[in-house]
Picture 1: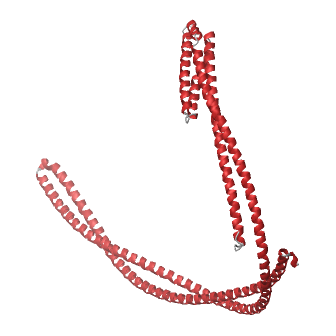
Picture 2: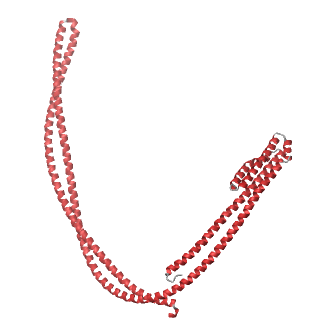
Length: 489
């Protein structure tokens, strides 16, 4: 290990090498565990194949037993194992093909077993069908012929071949697992021992190097601590004097800040009063505007009333003209009725009925004339009332115009007041803003002085602590020297 390396670099080198050993050991252990898990999975896979093969043979035996029981007794209860085996065999064969999909030899044997089971099922079904048809003798002859037994023996042979190969695979995989486990043990134990040896050697080397360097550093610390004690003593004295001066400045700035805040509060109250006056002026101005709008509405409505009254007078004149025509028609009708009455009187008995009609027409004409006179009198009254209303409305319009002019003068006065109040408010706000800025500046100065005073106090405290620390450092350096070089005690 290089003697020019720093202590941290040496420690880093030692930890790096130790970590490398640990990582290598961990990777070896992980790989061994991974292989063991894979091997265990293969063993489980082989055991499942063996179980399925054994179950296949067991189901075929159950089917054969059920067939023989039915042939002997004729009881359909014995056919239940045969019927259940049909579905179970198909499921078992499908699972076996899936489990041995990576083994062509096993796939070939499964094909042979499947053909033999089909032959056996055909033989079982044929005998069962013969027994159901009442031909039990023929069914027994087929059984006694030995074909079914040969098929079952061939099936057992094929299943035994499948089981034998799986057992060989199982033995091989168990041996691989044992070898992997042994290699993992050797790797872990050997790596751990090697790592421990390296750590011990690195610790001895680092300790020797550290002892020499600490001795040199302790000497430098002793000389530096003495210088630090002298500097800290001078700094503490200067800090106490500076703290006293900062305290007096802080008191003066605080009094200035209180005065500035009082001025700012007074300016703020004046500004609030000016704003309230401005709001009142703006409110009065709005009220005047609303009054002007109302007077304008009244003026428009008055003009409309005058227009309607003039239209009413014009229409009453038109009605008078119509009444003149109606009155003239009534007079002419009356004259015609009188003439008709005279002519009817000269006609004697033949004109009597016509005279009655003419008399009624004359009466009707008289009533129309009388009604026309009454209507004319009412129209004259309406015309007089319209003229009177028009004159009154025009007088009201003149009064409204005069009120509008007065409201305009009032509105102008309110606007002038609002402008003056606005100017006053802006001036007061400027005063308030200036005073607040002055107060803020005073506060900032006070805070700055307080910070300086606090910093001075902290410097004084720090100087005292530094002095104490320097004394402790001197004592600690002596203790370290005694620890590194016991003979120096």
